[in-house]
Length: 314
Image (cartoon, rainbow, N blue to C red):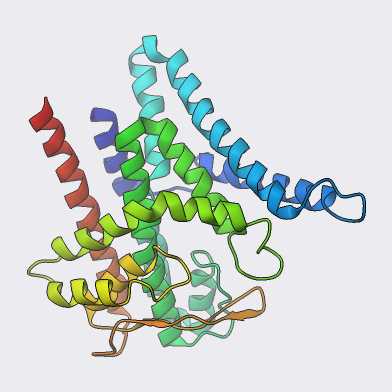
């Protein structure tokens, strides 16, 4: 419990400094290597399996490896007291992205003072969509959507899996989520190799996304429009290509009284998406701050529920 609390505080205080080694960056390099290998061996008449099969193999291999590596490292360090707790805390800390998400979204917020091109560039670090032609409202929408979606993907989901199975299970989730972020697109290039990574990510995010949406609303009492948050989350829960993303995005759209969703461009292809929420008012720059506020409120109440349950059980 102490390691988990320390990890949350560490994330809040320093976020994700670029100078520190990060397991997710290493996961990304592994996935990139696997993708290149899969495409090389599946190309041509003498190909060794389809890209969809290679994608399934990647999921299986990466889940096993991402569980066993931290499991055995921590097992080896179990008798070394302080060293064990430092490494365990660091593993847990690297799985939680609230601090990083808040800092990166605020870079977008602050970049508006430096011109639209700088703002587009800042946004490009946190979204997968193309940003070169986005106007101010589209940039704000993209940032708010990213904070909302990643409150589930980058905060509540890894926290939940860490609560259940420690750093090892949290690493499994981060590996699957990283595969989805790199390969889980619906365009021609990724629809086959990314099929199983995307489906696995959908499965692992099924419960966290719904928990996130509910906690977003509960934690916003006396601050935002809670009834509207629940209403939009339930009404528009299917207004997304993902079976999960519309829950946190819908909750945020309702709480803030804005409209999210709509078409985006990925790798030169326009992806049609329905709208989420009602345009009670226009999006504004301060909605970026408000979405980060909702994220932290949701994280705090989820952690509080966990620690209270541990106290009651013990």
